[in-house]
Amino acid sequence: MNYVFPLWTPPALSIHGSTDLFAVRRIFCVGRNYVEHQKEMGGDGREQPFFFLKSEFALVTNTAVVHYPAKTTNYHYETEMVVAIGTGGRRIAASDATKHIFGYGVGLDMTRRDLQQIGKDKGRPWDFGKNFDESAPCGTLTPASKIGHPVKGAITLQVNGKLRQQADLSEMIWSVPEQIEYLSQYYTLEPGDIILSGTPAGVGPVQAGDELVAHIDGLNDLHVKIAPAL
Image 1 (cartoon, one colour):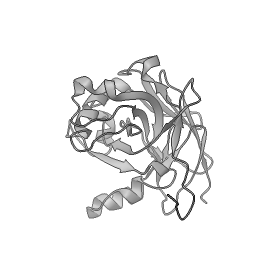
Image 2: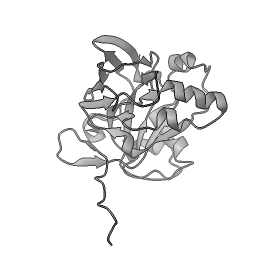
Image 3: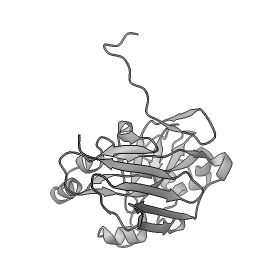
Image 4: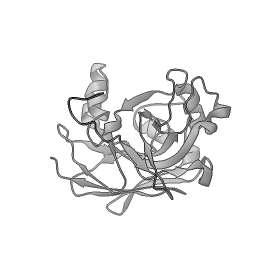
């Protein structure tokens, strides 16, 4: 079959210890999944999980340069553990969920907070606030076969060497298996799907020139520099 223009290279993440790549299909993000972050965003309690999606073309790979995006003056970081699905399925029980996970990494859910707030205020979708160019920097994946399935460990973010976010994976409101169970009731999960599993408290703005280092114990750090707007 011929196409009217050349096909793009599939967005993909590197894999620690391998020359193979993990092709990314969809990016699911869970909202308000740490108690203190839920409080800072106006929530209270263990509410039903909710998700939004980013395009796979929002992906930016490790040691990334990310440009300050258009149409915002309030550009925020959110540090998250990336969960990479290796085996698809639907209606997956939480007790079986880890069998579907290929590996884990460190990611950032970059957010145009002012545009997200406009969507909230007007009862409109969040796409302009969440799903935009270069809004999903993600680091190298580490296979679960090498590290198991992290349920505790530090998750932190430094901006220009100063600590801005600090929590533990054990503080998730909805665990990774519970997220997979919930999502797979609404979607057929497929190999290549990734889940950004929530951010702790301490989200805040960055400016052009800032350097971010996102860290989760046992995984490869993610380094991002914010470049001036295109």
